[in-house]
Length: 81
Image (cartoon, rainbow, N blue to C red; front, top):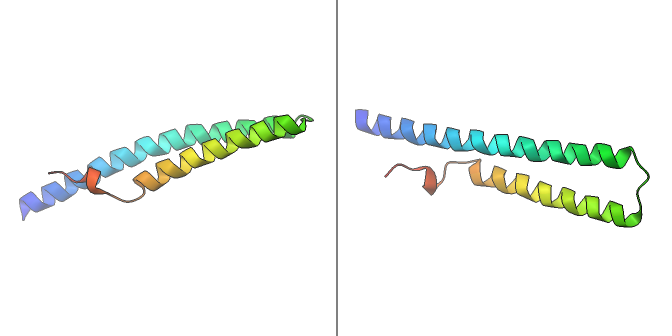
């Protein structure tokens, strides 16, 4: 029983470390999204600029979603073998 507990605890710790790393990366991307929004709100942009900014926002959002989806739940990669 002790070995099972230790293995389970290690699995949770490994997952928590991966999740924290992902949250740090998500924070950077969300701050970049905020900076783009502030930039867009403070200027008169051409249609081409609006399209380009939206493309960047979509890319950043997809990256945040991918990080979140990859680390929300413990997966096979988090299991200690």
